[in-house]
Image: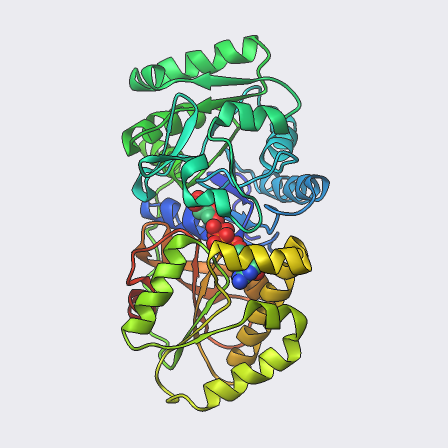
Length: 431
Ligand SMILES: Nc1ncnc2c1ncn2[C@@H]1O[C@H](COP(=O)(O)OP(=O)(O)OP(=O)(O)O)[C@@H](O)[C@H]1O
Ligand SMILES: O=C(O)[C@@H](O)C(=O)CO
């Protein structure tokens, strides 16, 4: 990277999935940081000289904890060599993980690598209705465990108490910085964090109900080398860096129009995405709903069927291809083939479709689902993303940077993000 080593990056992030990384990059850009999302560790010379924040996207949310730790450590080491002032481990606003990890093990490893004592951990994203109160994560007006996340295909979330959840995954005890302390401001948070460090807590879950709370937490976190959180905490840290004059040279890019047919590929089974698919179909977007059993059992036949179907559609009009299904169908697919095998087969098929579409001239892709987006971006060999205008909270339009010979507009949508008309809106913003 041509970064001025004496200045270094103001902020670096290691994100555990690609859409989560895009969500964070969007927040940092909107706070005024010149931000690039890289897919893995970037090669020398890829990034512009004046970049202030780099979000290294990994696909490490649902892999074995030891692999997630190794990949996150490598990303951290690159950020550290780039003179990074603060490292944020970007996790999902719904704390997606299992008792085996990976939030605890990666937080432990990066805490040691950065020399932090007790990092602030806060997934809250009030703009998407994720709040943390007394350590309990709410999705809208429901506890996490009563939200649709209890049916997540890869990591169903059954415990809303984040202190308890993180303790099960971590090397030591977890503390809490409660709402009443956060309300008192950044100095009170810093003192509470230091007190928890003296007690030997390895991390501190912090409450946040509003963006103001995240600004306070961001101010306190920016005084330390490392934190773990969602894009809300990232925005708070970025705002603190701008206030302190340590960053703030660029807003998100205006992206040039690319045009041509828009293709939407969905592997997300979230309630939000299922509704968005229904709405897109009702609005007249040609929609092919795949049979998930057939995808896993006969991927080649399914691929041929998709090619045949698309050949019959109006060549300019957008199309939507979805493997997405409601919880009962997902459960029966997983029962028959196994959770991981089914997930990988479906991601693989959608990635193969994306590759085919780009090879045959499509230049605008909208992908729903974090794991699905990871599979697609990897199959296309994309190296980094420029962040453009916001489509919905947490979802910007982007353009591929490096790794692909043609201009390509991409929208990577986290499963639960976006309003009902998201797909039509995405295609109109990604011109
Ligand atoms: N019908 C289905 N049956 C079983 N698994 C499915 C089905 N459709 C998709 N999947 C798998 O479910 C997983 C969905 O994960 P993905 O991360 O893409 O979406 P998400 O969880 O909604 O998004 P996010 O992680 O951004 O919240 C993928 O592994 C996908 O292949
Ligand atoms: O924080 C979120 O909810 C998203 O950025 C995400 O990571 C979903 O996969």
